[in-house]
Amino acid sequence: MRNAIIVEHLGKLYHRYHTHKPATIMEVVLSGFRGLSAREKFWALRGVNFTVAPGQMLGIIGKNGAGKSTLLQLLGGVGIPDEGQVKVTGRIGALLDLGAGFSADLTGRENVFVSGVVAGLTRREVARRLEQIVAFAELEDFIDNPVRTYSTGMGMRLAFSTAIHTDPDVLLVDEFLSVGDLAFQEKCLERIRELKAQGCAIVLVSHSADQVQKLCDRALWLRQGQVVAYGVAEVVAGQYLSEMRSETQKRTPPRPPQMTKGGIELRLNENRFGSLEVEIVDVQLLPTSHINSGDGLIVEIEYSLIQPIDAPIFNVSITQEDGQVCLNTNTQNQGILPLFLQNSGKIRVSFERLDLSGGKYYVNVGVYESNWTYTYDFHWHVYPLFVQSKTKQSGILNPPCRWESKNPASSKFKS
Image 1: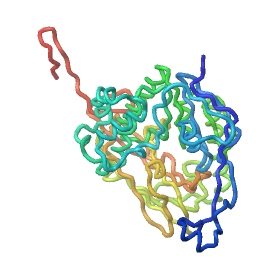
Image 2: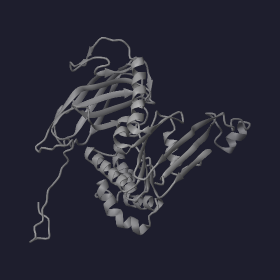
Image 3: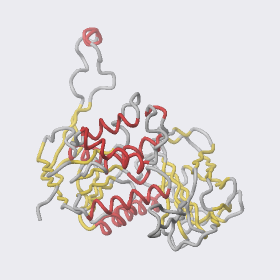
Image 4: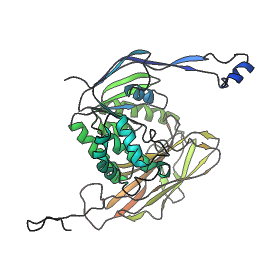
């Protein structure tokens, strides 16, 4: 079978300039033409080799600065390699920094047409698919509003929907599972499975090794622009997780069990992990830890620190009792500007609705070093969440739904 993507000996060289490099002609003259030359050169990628076959999904993992975004850009034709080559066969669906290509002053409808034409569709083809695109993004009431009035989630949903409706042979995805609530994420997953079954080659950049293990066939682990491991997703992602856990354990200080403000015992390397440079001192589930399916939930994290911490990443996940991940989100994926923590404080994330089936879940919270190198503090299966539902579902999700039937005597569906 002919590969959809072939990458051979790929390298990308960048120049690092002085911080105060002159930006205008006047500044150049006044500086005496100093500071124009590059201070140093560095390889963002070097010696990268891999292939992706039609119907295959490759996950790319690594810390910040590993070269993941640069690789995705080169696959999408943004930039020229300095070494090696990239061969992509067929139509590329998107280079998904979700919503980054939208114009804020254009309406959602206008942006769909622009993005669709850029992706290779004709205006007529975009027009035929417009209703499907808008319906998938669940933006029927907002499609004619300027994108600047959209929330981050709305823009991401529209960008994702546009990308998957362009009949791509190759789809390049950056953290697509951060594009909405649980029900919408499941819809995205189902569409990804359909594209794979139709022969679409998919490349997913993700910080979540668990996500790569579950979704991808193969994985590529990058470190400082070079390949650490490439192979079966479960094995490579497992190696990546093992290294991260090892670094965290090395930094974990000896400390007796402690109690949260809510009276829950935290035991290091059992239900608590981390270097404790930032400590999670309490977590509140608001308005309560007992909710109905479809209700909203606020997770409020209180933290303390001894010295300032630059650009930490806060993470919240919801899991079942057996550890099955139902939801996973963090400040970095959601586009929150890097935080600079100087004093103790609180941070919260609000979920508009949680369409979970009835049962017991756990809310897990963590704070990570800015490059995901290790964990400052992570609480696992400490904060229970109880969901009540009027309907019985065998799966995880319990989204609103309505059954309709049509009998031979009528051409209309009836509830």
